[in-house]
Length: 460
Image (cartoon, rainbow, N blue to C red; front, side, top):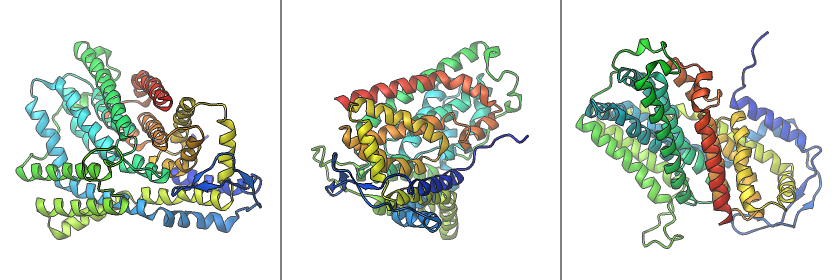
């Protein structure tokens, strides 16, 4: 008997398209009155309308219509992918990590917080996740040689980047897309996400350092004792040349500018110019940044173009997922059942306070993230429904985005449907069940911590 394998996000989303189309045949069609520029549903105005069932033709066309609706988001994703492709081609990130390791010779314990902060900043700024795959073969031998084990190295990468992704302060692949579909700025809610970043990263560093200290003292307590003999050698990395230092500076400057450009200084009463950039401007920023890095590093016109196109191609699947999952919303809207779902939610939430609603959004997105591992896909699928529902409970849309992002990022650390998790564990020869045994207590801390903060933020 063949073992069950979780289908891809594409298959899951196509099944959702079919399920939603079928639902339009028996779920009552209805509509809210809407107000404001963002067309927020007005509570208490729901009324049933004529049934508008969706058939086979509508299911086939829905992903294409969804892609047209979200073309600005999809193009932005491709531009970021191209930018990262050029950056990885220079080897500057690998060289930067290697330079830190060399300077800490004899003080390897400091590698844990330094590297986890580095990965956390990458995770929270540009969703550094798949890109971490390059670091497993480099860092695992270093940590094993320093007297730790493969679990320590894997945890530094997965928990370091994962904590950043969970907070998602300005992550364009998750928080940015979710904010776009919620109709709020990427800067809305950023202070709360910065707090979560500090808490998540601090808890992860403490957790990993405690385990590492125990293994350093008593190696036999390692969860992978006897499995790491193949890593008893140093990994190789390119040198941190002056040109690569300049490249890293440009890389950092692009993300600093992105953060500044989306921050709503005027709404916060701060005396700083508000640029108000969004997906078109940010797409141009990453395009220019990628070209500048390639030419300044000396890749040349052809090699820069190839690296940019290759990097964009790596994320074409994300763009497709955006179109397919946006197609689910298209079918729900055309079938006039979106407002019906909102109405059911309004009735269910009529007795619930804002704190309970915020926590329920977080808990709901946990299982959804397992079925749809792509945070981008889940954002465009769930946020158009959850954000308006939050208005009925008196919860700001930015808090709904934060709850979604925290849940999506948390699940990515442990779900077997995440390629980075399974690939990283395979590199380190860490069995999946032992990774679960290692990380489950920290994830429980994350769940309780997030629920408490969401509750408190919603009722304040």
